[in-house]
Image (cartoon, rainbow, N blue to C red; front, side, top):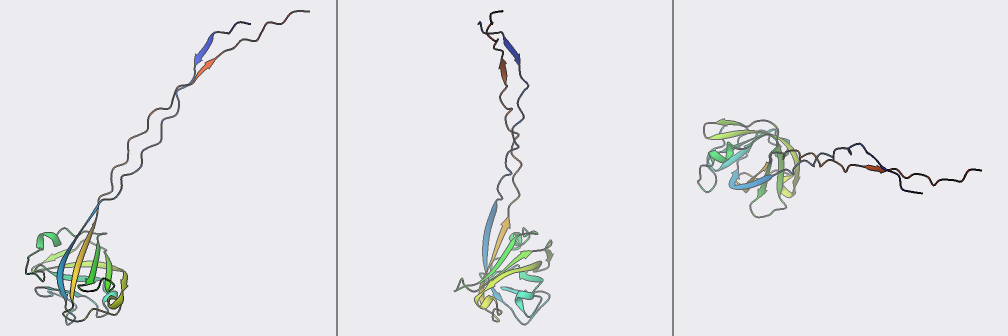
Length: 173
């Protein structure tokens, strides 16, 4: 028999899925310092950083001088440290000796130094058992990037079309 007329256009397909969230960005900077073990609060003095606990890995705050071991005033960079940034304090000569902290709250700028609230994450080598007084270390700031925007909504799905096919004519009996 003959092919029947084309049927009505079907409903529009579902909207595509929302795009993935953008990847986190990040950056890292490091500065040369010395650890001072004779203080647990206040201004650490030029070229030094201190912990608010004699057991360094138990510290909840690290105070860092604005003047690094090279004599540079890095106040502008210390002011950029924010909650959720990572801080790594590493032996200048041996990367196996380190301590890693996460910034747990907004740092407080003081005259000549910054107070950084931290939570301990991990350590290795002599970083686990405390750095010595005047130990040369690098102070690494890894800044967590801002989460990227959600991707655009996906394209509309294809439209379905139905074709009506008539049944062949059957002879009558």
